[in-house]
Length: 464
Ligand SMILES: Cc1ncc(COP(=O)(O)O)c(C=O)c1O
Image (cartoon, rainbow, N blue to C red; front, side, top):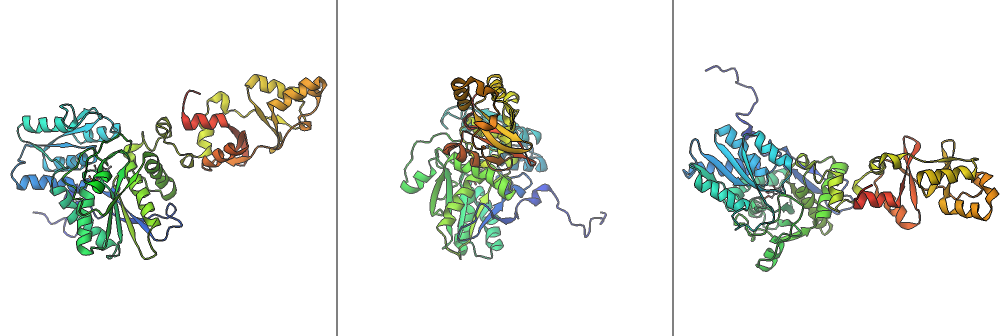
């Protein structure tokens, strides 16, 4: 055989590139906290998520047990990421793959699995696990009816936490030189927190292992009471459950902190804008919990949070302003003023303005034509005042000849000016206090206006 590859640095297959993901410090979102917060960025895995780690581990376990043989089909219930991890293994090792998932999953995730040649079966989200149409039942059916098909069963497969005990845990320990004091991770199957947490506690039983759980999931209540409760739907994907997976060992977990959709999803958006770390909603949730945990820490503590996947899979959801707004989750702090001004319908987007010295009757015409309630008055590029509809009408009724006088005579002070690149909560604060509108400045010139109505329209949605 040729030795042309001798000394060449390469991997034998894509599967060998899984793991060894970097730790990156969260800087701006963690300012003013007493200790550093580091994020383990699992989107560096070739499939873009932490689940690459368990794909190979579960397949190899099934091979070793003699359940999965040449020509077999890998079957799994997965919200996408585990599917991708398994689809890569199937492609490299020559197996077929079939995945079952709830229909709330983003279309990006579904199409991605199909790109790897996998079959995808979608089930309604709001049915009980025991219902024949649930994605659990569909996966079970395929794995029993199709010859050579094997259910990977990540929720109850010991190879899942084991993969994290062997890879994620040791990486965290070595990367932090054993200084990690708090480990935060979201829980789906619980494989990550159980395996990595178990390893960290084996190395130092003082390491605190903290689970992040979406509001609506039953895992926090179960950890605290040992009892089941009723689950409610929520928007954060991949984490939280309505049943107890046996892959989770609750004795490894010290406590569980819950996080609502609004806080978790807006944190995912902040991580992109403030840290250039582009992750999904479950990572936003875990980061939000890590920052809450860090608030109660000391200067010698080191909080590490695992961020499970890339934001690219959620471009039509958490990273889409319209989706966030339609779900009443949009935090104005995560949107720029310029985006809102640009999003107004073309008719309302044009700034209607007056020049100082123009007669009041011109103001009256503009107010009637454009149905606006206030008009900024300019002298050249400078904003020098505001004309309110009420003041114009009052003046015209009380003294009709005043319509010939310049607007300067009755105008009020100028509206506040806000930069297009500023976060929109600056505007909501100004409008909630005493201003009826603000002007938007871009490239050194005032180009738009945002009224209370415009802001409500953007935040609450509705037809414009
Ligand atoms: C996006 C995402 N985040 C977090 C998790 C939770 O990881 P684990 O199943 O190891 O608890 C999952 C698992 O499905 C996931 O898909």
